[in-house]
Length: 308
Image 1: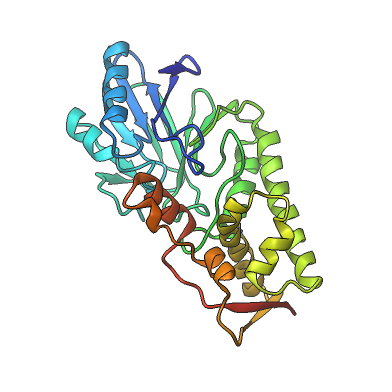
Image 2 (image 1 turned 90 degrees about the vertical axis):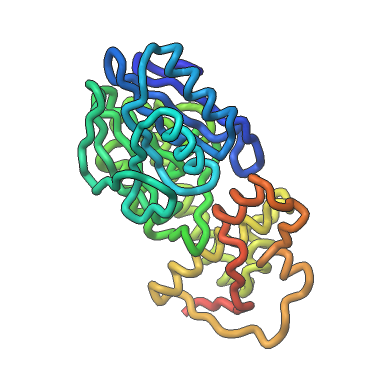
């Protein structure tokens, strides 16, 4: 376990991949002499469960609660085996579909030992997303709302761009002065307001690029990907296509874009961007994360997008 503060330790799951970076971060928070709180127990992996159990032995404590930021398969499935091993209850968002014992309201305050957390509903990346604020340290456990490295996937149907942007603005307005941010992936963040400003600016800049590309004549998602992400590794273009779809859904809802059917089938190259074949990954943890994060399996009609 890596110690990040007098109260907080990090346990990184052994699940590195392009989607999870160096692995999914789990956290152990000390709540006084013996009470511990586990945050994001991670994927269904005995090694990560055993790491949480070993951390408790090392600290001489027991888990009073298991908090889960959201239900994606690299964050939530480890909660059930850790709960079975420790007897600790699992706390989650009211919309959570994974097993849990109690739901948490927006703004609710929960205390375990002398560690108090304020709960924030933080949708956008996922509908069931929570952010936990450790009040004593004014530290944010942000899950996949903000990462220590890179940016966040926002992809339909679970991801909603405008909702995500509202979450970022709320965090900046209410917790821009936070002392630390602990994301679901990557290192801890100490310049919290700077990071939130960077995230907000990135989303606004990407939207401007998409609108400029539409104005220049790129009118399908594959065409937009080729223009907006031309300097990005082509292996990431299918993920970029889902990001662009999230922006287009927002722009259409605001009346800034309208759509019409394309009177032909997509080419094989276009189809590979719109709904890539993940069968070569088999039934793997990586494939599960990709499907959950990017919404694959929800085929979209081939459409043209035009500025109004």
